[in-house]
Length: 163
Image 1 (spheres, one colour):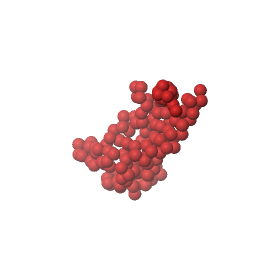
Image 2: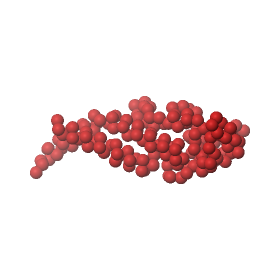
Image 3: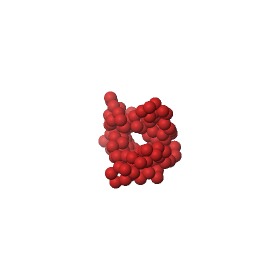
Image 4: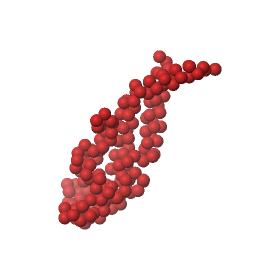
């Protein structure tokens, strides 16, 4: 039977292993979450709560998309006039925190406008998608844990206790 002291020693050892690997695990999780978010948002046109973005409403914007190089599709709202917006959704460091966000102010403003609405140049309110888009879905978090984090931590614990 394990003594209380050996149990506490094991907990301390696990804690020190986790602390030592904290940044690595965050980088692994955030990098993979960014991939899942980009796929859901820019490939499947789906928000956080599994709602689809719907269709473009503005006739002038539909004309602009059709007239663009290559003639962009107009059947579903896909947030991709160019690849800039999707490419700006990135993993990085803000201060001392690992984060996922937009690398340009322009893309950040577009994201906020899509989730909450925006105003035209003349000040008219325009409803955009109007629901959460960029927060991770529960299923995305589960995938990150099951497919990436759990196997990684299992390896860390094996190394931690083999020393």
